[in-house]
Image 1: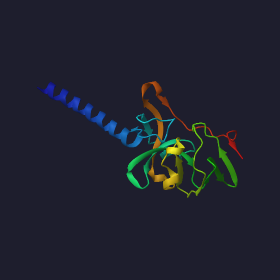
Image 2: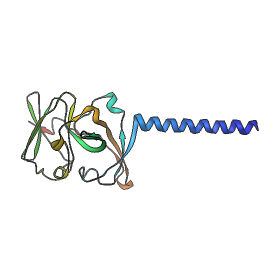
Image 3: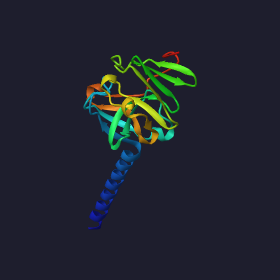
Image 4: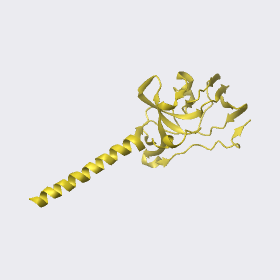
Length: 186
């Protein structure tokens, strides 16, 4: 009888540790996200199943070009997926469908290979505060983003998209595009 009791106790301990590990990972490290809608096409399609890294932004600030999951500023119970375009303190300028960043007197035009079509938006300008990000969907003509509801406060950023897990034929890891000086025109 004692052997059964100790075996049962060991099994319960193993299950409790596994459940605690899953809860900790899901709460502090990564969580799944299902894409709903077309605002990030062609990069992410409706129904894509992603893994969102929630830890990295506790160690460093978000960077331009990274795809993030964020709480919608007007309803924190809703989550959106968007790409970071403008960083804190910068001015985002959209003129004739071209996105440029004004930072420390330099006007940098973004080369955005992930955008398929020219943006219908003609003129827009937004200066970001010290803890604000400007985000847009890759499907610029069909994205509800910072052009509509303004900058995203840093505390509304949930995490960075790291992996597409589904569909399997398009599974891959993601990082930010490299906006080196060779891809930015003055």
